[in-house]
Length: 265
Image (cartoon, rainbow, N blue to C red):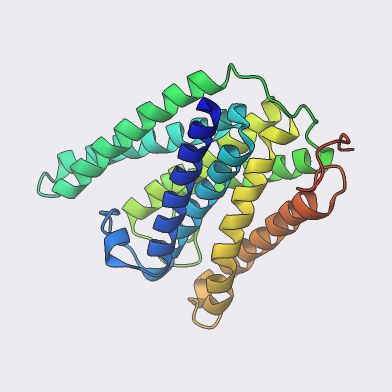
């Protein structure tokens, strides 16, 4: 009974995050009000994709009750939230008239602390599904980590021309920490290379891809020529990750969602 109630609560949390993603995608005022930084339409869509990438694995964890899988996501969000908190406090101290930034910093601090606690709790729980992570997924995760670290590091250092649209310096740092947190997320799956510790990442990446791919394809018609190659590279990564996720989640017999019996090869 207790496990059922926890599962319902986790699924509800995932649905709430997904609802917020919809709000950001359509730039609804109630949603974008939660983000106190200057943003463009594509930036709001990017935030929607990140929220969708968080929501889907949370819903899966609540449904499957694979509580050990919480650890990877909690570690990811701990890095992202705490780094955002430090940056936001620093920004506020430079201009104390930006009170929403202070509130955002406090919220990130609280969420980061909660995620650290969740990581400490969930990392001691054994996985129910002990199937190993397929070699193809491990190789893809290494590729993702390299891309995320390089892009995230460049964004945190405020190097221009990383995204296929113009970012302000504050957005650049914040999005950089999103990427670096995601690199930790994939890295934790390589430390504990089990299918149950990697399929959530694939689900999240697929959700991220599906949110971004349409707007990115439409963006080809109006992208700044200087950022055209960035759009090509980013879209290629989206297509590759979507193909990898789709194959292992829905096609590969040992790991597809309808099978839980035979070990992956």
